Image 1: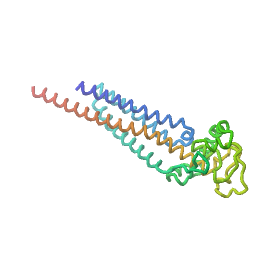
Image 2 (image 1 turned 30 degrees about the horizontal axis):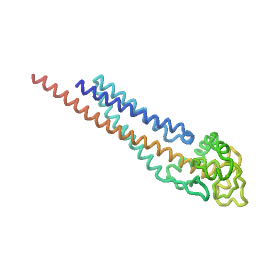
Image 3 (image 1 turned 120 degrees about the vertical axis):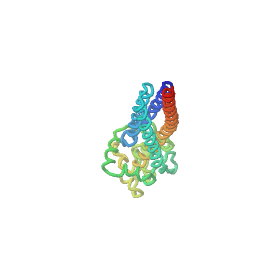
Image 4 (image 1 turned 45 degrees about the horizontal axis):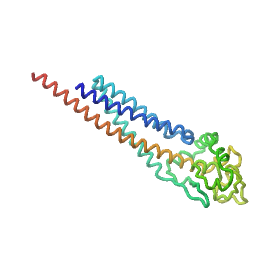
Length: 269
């Protein structure tokens, strides 16, 4: 029984270590400008990682110190957390299935439309209350100002592969027909009726296109790209965690069988 408990404890160490990439993924999302403004995915990921860490530590204590009820708690709680992690992985995949950029004439960067994204994501940015908070957060970053330092000529900017967020928020939509002065300053054409965003564009550096639907779409495109990257880490961790959990269940069952056999031998003798 002692050997089996030590095996269970060692397995639980691995389960505990698997919480690190989950917590790290949440911290990485927090450090991204768009995710830090929206605050949707990172905290569920971080909290889930911390819970896996705590439950894994309980399993280590239960294994090495031979506390059966703590091992049972570990098995039940870890199963629930694995189900929650799997649900989160599926959810992220489903809400990021839709939404891709559109090619603009003579441009290397893509442009984005709000209606291309899933309804759940659109609802995160459509209400004026939510968007005003996000907008103020985005406008306080240097993502647009940095474009003026990197691209001096129109052709250099048109050939640039800027981020979806920069494409949607830092410049007017290409279909508006504005004339380039620098990446964040454009001369308005006589007719701005091509799109409502054309009317919303402002050369004021704190305004730009932060009120445009293209900015909301660019934000969602950025979130989609980063969430997909995060989801890859979560999927790999989920698979590893399931394997470790199955091995732990087998070791626990073998330990219980060994314990019953020893009791039977003692009673027989």
